[in-house]
Length: 363
Ligand SMILES: Cc1ncc(COP(=O)(O)O)c(C=O)c1O
Image 1: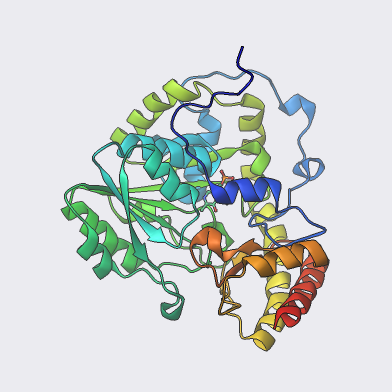
Image 2: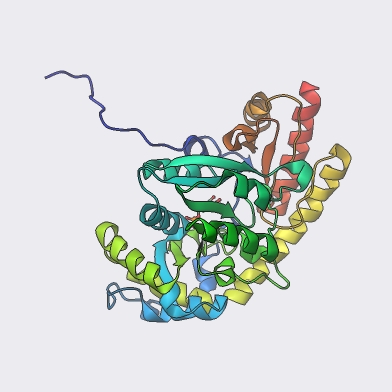
């Protein structure tokens, strides 16, 4: 038998995800984007609260109702997804296919364009520019949209910049999409870290919006894989039927723990708020000296730090200073770095000090 391994088939991958899973760990890891894990012991779950198997069917009713109540979205518009990742997968698979086109923000979390390509669709990018506070220009979308465009994809808050998109801009994008028979998908996984007057979910802005989110980034509950899609009822029904092909049913212990998490969501969010506000202050100190932008919201900052590609700086930082940040090239903006605002404060302070030392070293 030939000992050479045969690898066949199409290759789909995310360079960022591979880096995050194999190269981002470090003593001072400033490459994260989700708040550190919420301890199971603090969730107040007892074994009596749990059961292995649940009722099955299309969604665990207490969980759908909890999500519905938290976001003011009717329960028949709430579909379960395995984290925001699963939610995005299902939405993309349902709404895109060969011959279709997706308009996707640039820069973006690289799973989003890769997922669209996986469906067989083509992608076109519209640009969010730092000099314009990373805003989306609906006019640009109006120029780029074609009869083949089926989906416009945004993150709000924006990953990597943390920029918030206002309801008026979203509504205008929704109208442009509607005139072309397209949907708008807004990934809101970071939106809950607007502590006061959280904007309403974009789902409530028009009948052609879909929204994805989860308990991952803002709540530190990634391991529950509790995610959801908000979709108009007819699409929600089709999403449930699509899910039959992939997952059948979710993990019931996870559903039960997620219901408990929703009961204590305000408290969990308050823990995150304290951490992020402390860290924003620490980051602001360094940013003001270095001329880095300070995002108003969100769990990360994405400053432009060099005139050249930051990847060698990131290597130096990792090898000599035991510190990681995300190289901007994973977002197609190589002069930038993505810096976590959700590490323990001591780690952020020390990691930023090391980043400054590395910057001085290469100057
Ligand atoms: C915009 C965006 N969506 C989704 C995810 C994945 O979220 P989840 O852990 O809920 O699958 C990430 C993770 O970095 C993200 O940045």
